[in-house]
Image 1 (cartoon, rainbow, N blue to C red):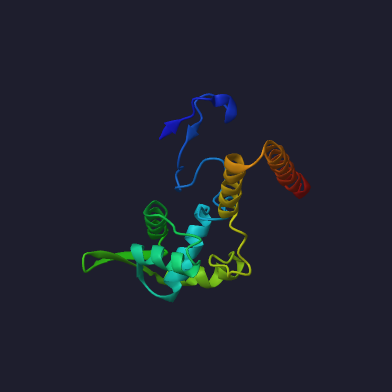
Image 2 (cartoon, rainbow, N blue to C red):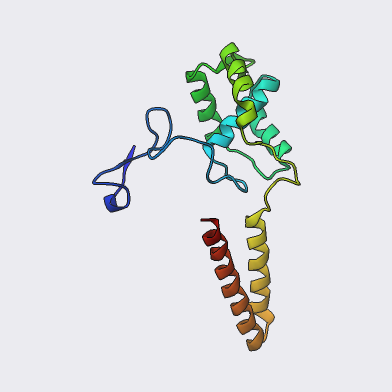
Amino acid sequence: MTYDMHPERRGGRGHRRGPGPEGRRHGGPDTGHGRGQGRRRHRGHVRVAVLTLLSEEPMHGYQLMQTISERTNGAWAPSPGAIYPTLALLEDEGLVSVVESDGRKLATLTDAGRAYVAEHQTTWPDPFPSDETRAENLRELVQQVAEATRQVGRSGSPDQHSAAAQVLRDARKALYLLLAEQD
């Protein structure tokens, strides 16, 4: 457990950071919304993906990671630090049973877990969106823009440098305007 060294940011002196009693961060429920694009997903998406896959068949943690990566064509590859705590939490909630099998831990939905999935699955976001519904990979696009910028910086004329700088300033402004329109 850590304590925030800047209490003015978080509601008072010594505000506790880190997981709360249900394994959630302080500051709100784990709704599954938030950072959900690209390779990083919010904890709620991991939970939904694990429950969805276990409703199809029992799996080991490594199988879960591999299957998620395969179903998203590599766009999302959760780490062991995302999968195993999620399995532990689901086991604590009685939704998953984890048993040792051939030196590996096999996760299986319990009866309560199957009932939970059947009741809630229609309200969950699709943890494995198709290529048509998946958001653009912004990180990859930013890397492409950075490479093009480096090329202009290395071999461009002073006029091209100025034009490139204006393009980047305009792009930054346009991105912030997108967020402003959202509200």
